[in-house]
Length: 363
Image 1 (spheres, rainbow, N blue to C red):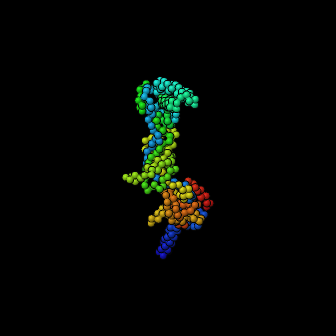
Image 2 (spheres, rainbow, N blue to C red; image 1 turned 45 degrees about the horizontal axis):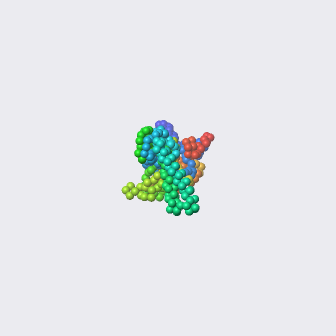
Image 3 (cartoon, rainbow, N blue to C red; image 1 turned 90 degrees about the vertical axis):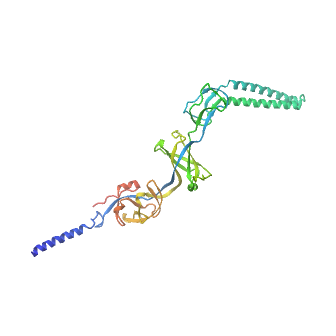
């Protein structure tokens, strides 16, 4: 019986010893006994350009949009554009019938030539004291009137040819060939599409940060994910008393004409640019008692806790104002499985953050 109890006791002791040994940490290859090496995705801390942006909404406007009208009363002889056509400054858009204008110009030219000749003869006669000073003054006046009448007839001839005053796109026709038009009657509209203006309002609290020359990025629902760039050129000197906002305008290049005046746009206003901001993935930040912390890799790739002060967040990255330096390494994924002093193995996923994975160690 004693022998039987001795065997049972020996078996229980052996099981207890095995259980104790099983509760310890398995030795990692190449490391000290009882230590795990934890793989983790790690990011390199390095300076990068940080653009601080404000999300706003606005509308696109044409910088120039006018009605093309006739400055003469008469018959519209020809329309020389196609609706929706892109035209350049000086291009002929329409012609008015110019029979009467041509006749008036010829009459004015003849009267001018006669007045000029009379003026020249009168000057010689005045020197010869053949005519009085008052007669010569009348010739001077007649010569001036004839010159003015000729200039008016020449202007009317020019007005009979209607040209585009700037580059733009012609809208729909509003008159027909052969139609009699009165002065000021519209023929079509001309709309400048390149560049456009983006108009938006900025809260009063951001007024000091908005200046001409700043960049904006904008998107419209019609163009999907396509982004367009613009430059601020106007900041209103007045603050709207009701909304406490300031009107701002930006020039938006539109060489392909894909943007249209009147479009609603979402835009980002770049209010500051820093080239030396230390940025880390936002996933690397964890909190304890309201204090932001990261797990950084110290000597021998062992994890250590660092308290950090955060700055601007943008696109799943966060700026580090204090607590890290250029060249530090922080754990992005895997910090839940480790603590201070844990040996970290840099996983292949770290390549996206500028670090090569740790080379495997031989057993």
